[in-house]
Amino acid sequence: MSVGTVIFLVVAAVAILAAIGMLLSENAIHSALFLILNLACVAFFYQMLNAPFMAMVQITVYAGAIMVLFLFVIMLLGAERLRTPHGRFAWQVPVAFVLAVVFVVTVVVAVLGGGLRDMPPPPAMTEVEAAAYGGPEQIGEALFTRYVLPFEMVAVLLLASMIGAVVLSREEGFSISRGERLQRARGRRDALSLHHRRQEDLETEDVAGDLTPTR
Amino acid sequence: MEPVSTGAYVIVSAILFTIGVLGVLIRRNAILMFMSVELMLNAANLALVAFAREYAQVEGHVLTFFVMTIAAAEVAVGLALIVAIFQSRETINVDELSDLKQ
Figure 1 (cartoon, rainbow over the protein chains, first blue to last red):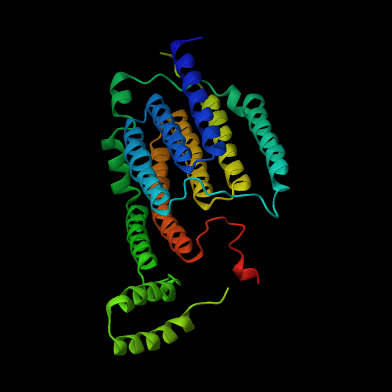
Figure 2: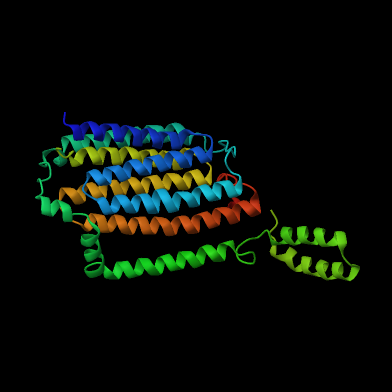
């Protein structure tokens, strides 16, 4: 067994254990940290697969930006230890495990018994090719010539999602807890304020009350 | 250093994908489910990059790049939704968010 295979097996074991840790840990922060470990292992795989640019993008975008967003939201909501008991769908758990095992066995059989086994290992590249393959120049060249239309579409999509996130987190936007927030604000003002202010606010509350759905 | 075969990467990718599916199926915390979706996307990316090397093409890398971008957009909108839902309902247990059924 070559050095590369040993390294691969060790990193694969760490990646799978990290994924299982994410799945099973009770604390959402621990789950997020396990997922970061898993993403770092996948970045290592990218490096082993001659994809240095994707490895760096994986670390900065996935393990960096996206997971920071996750951790930020978990801490913002205080959702670390939210109990999520199984209600009506508890029967799903054993079914899910059985189907998962079936799927993994299917893939292993397909890979080991099918065409993939007979594929020769990738041809060894010359040093010049290997240095260029998967680098930023090659990917940039592909992105800005053959794939320039998808690239621009993704840019528009990112802009749309940015606007969407801003709209969703605006107070007057999607949020339906506005009446509640008005009530709290009125409570604070009541403590120090004048009678006619309260009359105005009560009118405002009526309007807000119409917007608040009944549960 | 002899390269590891593509099949090995595909098997690891399938295992990670399955763990992601299990996360969506058995966890009821919306944030956890979201992270499991990220794990699935990531497993698919690993298979894409492995096949890109198999064929010595850069297309797989480009597709992985797009998948990462879409994942970032999805996380931004999805987490904004989760925050909005949590502020109005005080819960992110997906079983309790069944108002549309009533």
